[in-house]
Length: 234
Image (cartoon, rainbow, N blue to C red):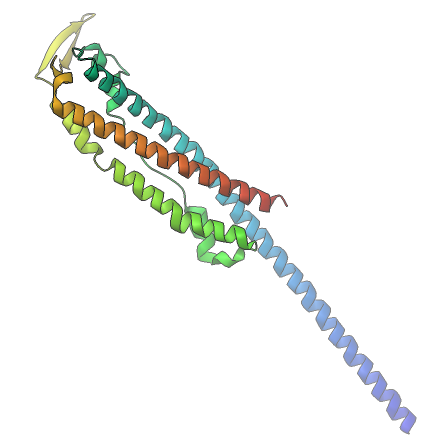
């Protein structure tokens, strides 16, 4: 009887062990599947952020080109003021002129959407601690500061364009190849007017300061994009 009891006891213990092992295996498989899903989600979100950064870098490069035209035109007119030149109609009358470039503004846009989506689902889903810290530092702290600076430098844009336009004289008509066109002239002494030189100084300052911030933004975006790429491709 004791032998039978011992056998049953051993058999029961064995059954329990098998059940426990089965449960542990099932849990391990479930954890593996969950980790796989989380990793797939993480890589998907990081890929979308990387794509957004690529687009933002390209757009910021184009903003920089526009601001470089503004800076170049402001420098051109400041040089003419220094040389005590007489204002020439061709500086504003022909298409993409230096005067036209003085009116250059920027439409600041960027795409934080993929990062915000990741953050709303839980930034802790980024498994790489350093990358997670880099994302938070860039999108929640450094980049908003740079954007605020650019907006600050650009806030006088409308007033500066209005000031530039205020120098124009009364409109007049002129026949060009049989077509009647309406023009307004700047006075010949425009380059001698103090207010015009002050305007050029503001325009140059806006351009150069914004270019510096945009350069820093592009550099940070490129570094973050490379960091994301290293995580995606590892």
